[in-house]
Image (tube, rainbow, N blue to C red; front, side, top):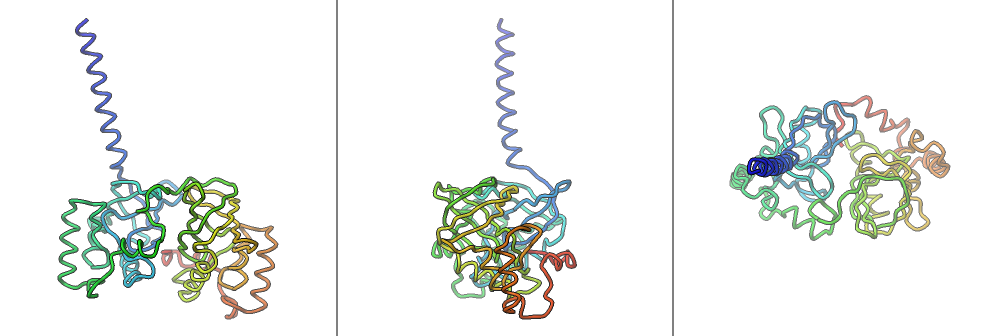
Length: 325
């Protein structure tokens, strides 16, 4: 009877050990993937081996300047050089509130996170990586050498910049990016990423990653000025405003939707001003987008000021190695 009791106790003990180590292993997942898009100096998307969908990655222990801050462009360009179209190894440390894998990123033996801090184009993010002495020392050396953003007398920490500008980022807990589902939503736009992509916070606190269905804005590398203009236009139309979002297609955490601000159909507005193409492949029966496209072409505004502009999807096909946004 003692033996049976001991065996039972041992089984429970080993089950507990397996559960603990199983949890640790899940958090410490390591995988390889090919970098697809670089969003900024500390985040990108990649496609895992054997898969087709993109996974969004946040670099562990670093914080790069935000769009609108000095050195944001240089930081993103540095990360592009390090990982664009390359096979990367990601050692996952955590999952952030946006559902992104937060990890140490390597290209061969190069520790990418460390290189970003060494170059002076990212801060050591102590709050989320306490005890990371390598990153801490790299920042101290970059400061002393006045590299990158440390050339400025008083550079603004991205965390403080986000707080002051009230943008929605991964540090804001309680609003995780939800798995995409088809349906109708209402909420407020908290951040615009480019001319066709933004984040929506719903009335119940959920965070939606939304794309304007049936539109396709020019790529940064294709037409930088137009790309920036499209982002600024969309920001003026929707940032901080109450929106109705009709999701017609859902994939992973991405919601492809028709978006309205009051009676204004935002998708059509972006096409009408010539800052986004009408993508008939994804919205073949949208008469409002068709009419907006016809109107923009006739008025020769935006992309239509030049003869025979190249559609973004054709440009991406011709420049697979240039794609990084």
